[in-house]
Length: 295
Image (cartoon, rainbow, N blue to C red; front, top):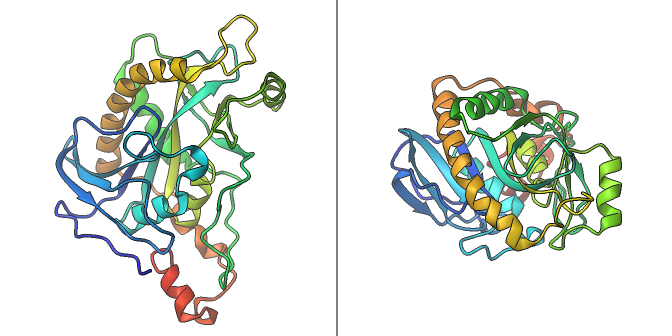
């Protein structure tokens, strides 16, 4: 299937926002335009909404679909990232619910992880294969410049009672079940900061698509490792997500203003320069068409 996208009336879009659990729309988005996008990897989780946020053109995608229909393993990660690439996105911020794996990271705090540990098992994690080979570097999976802008945006939002934790590792599990106590204690032994179910392979695919990527992690609970706190349940997580979603939208407004005014350079934007092993001339026409937006 050929990749296709409807024209965007507000002009080029370089900023993409991926809404996770509890964040299914951006209330302040104006001049909305909905896009049903076909990609060589299927359709995204939901139609992508474009519009203006604080006057800045953005694209917004709800990762789990409206009504939260998709478990983490069912999210079409490749289609999601490819569709954002087709729209011209160069900076993507993923807004994700997570559990805390450290005492000092409290529910309702915000975390900006700079590393990921991928423990997923059932997900397609690359655009390449079947006639094209690339090995992108994931030593530094988060764009440091984007993370700096995101940190400033959190601080500018002045969220009372909300702690900001910059850096740390996000362990991504398959889900949809929460951890056993033994697993939770094992993850803690890895010295991770937070646990979630959606950052991978999203971060890997963003790097292959040469999109600068960062996660705004919204803490909802202490997973099940904490000896004195209630073990995580869906009801608990979503109750805190309602509070977190409002905070996230305030942060994002600051973020898009600064990114639009001064888009930073990123090593992600040239990730394939040293990663592509198969020369495009050696790829079949079918493969080149499938990877057209990336190449």
